[in-house]
Image (tube, rainbow, N blue to C red; front, side, top):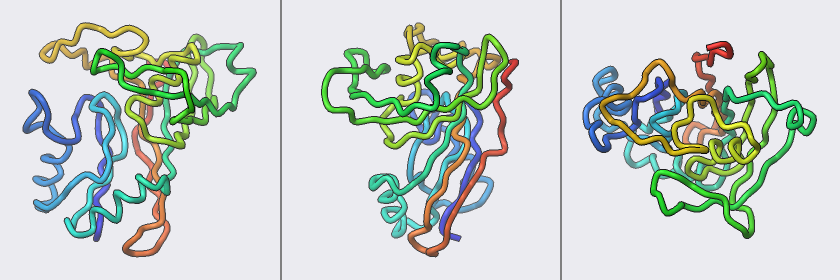
Length: 209
């Protein structure tokens, strides 16, 4: 096998960082599989749950990473965010903007200029005051989905960064309120095996949580 796919829980970082040197998706997978050469070919935020792909062989890693670089991977996310009747009438819509890092390293911000991000936003279920959204990013900038939904006036439920940056307490995380964002699907043509790959997360966000 060339890759291993993990269905990561909320709050677990993909790789070691900050205070999280041992409790990572990478370390857990190495222990579970016994494969010490595992390496992630892409990343998702620690706050986000869902699919992460790891390469098994170091000499094949670049070929898989190039799929993401060249935008040859179809990714679908799911999010719980406020229901907006005004916005719902516009959906589905592809939202585009130019994102760059803000003065605060934790946040990204929209600026004037040629768009460098795009996200197809669809609504799939309504349970007022919340709704379930299907998000299909055409690009992969940091915090893209969180920024785009915030810009549309529907910040993701339990987001501690957008629209307002909450003072961050590493030791006092509220595990009862995970960011309601899930990396739900990934599809691509395997550059090594040559076949179509399609993975779906078994996790489900609770619309009424």
